[in-house]
Image (tube, rainbow, N blue to C red; front, top):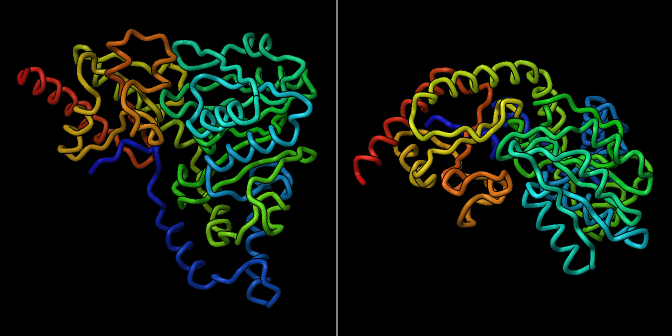
Length: 377
């Protein structure tokens, strides 16, 4: 199989898998236990937190271990909303956020009477900072926007967003950085909360982080013990937390190479498919190069996916968290595309493990599948 769905998840790197298995076997003790073995597990976990903090240029106490990006997003949005709801009940986000953001906002709107403003996006999937500026009100307590879109690779203008929110001291800024960590520079200056996930970086699933700037308070979602500064009760998944530092270190060491390599792959792929009739490129030229959304107009993406799968090639029709929902992708719908294009869209994503030969194989397969389907009609 040739894998083209790295935006959904990545294979666990061999050294990370081996290290994690060793940790599970040797350090299974509860990190809250007071005997020496438990104390040692806690020491290793806190060492990992310190190393992660150093790599992200933040303080250790500003990092909360989570089970991944969805939990971090929930913790950030619900935590701020419930803690500061007496200050205001208006939240700003965009119409193309991850499902864990959209579902959380719907929950807050339904059960806690929050008013949500969803900013539109341009044809590339980015918000207009001027619209954000105009949307902020006296009762706005939170702006939550993704750095990189998981379906089309759009990169939001983070510096402009930071500057706007900074002019409103009663408003917090949360950024979903799951798709951008170790793909683009990560500067948390001016950000109050940020979400991260390990399995997008060749790490283990069930592992992530929430950055919470010092001085920002959250209402906890899980009550019980005093783990994670009293914000996330429950026995730590210490092996995952410990190996996360090595996961991020490895990914950051490859960041520049990843960007250059995937840019080359994208250029090569787009050139290869440029001769295929009815193919439309959806992702913009300035999108993250490792995520490419295209449409084969008039052809159902599910059919394309299964034909490719039969040929040993794996792609995605939309975000993995939304594939069970029928119809056009919610993100694609917001780009203002003609329905015939939107309904034919699918996503391809690359990594350092993808070769130019792989890309050529995919392009050739798409051409052959299109011809096969055309003849069968």
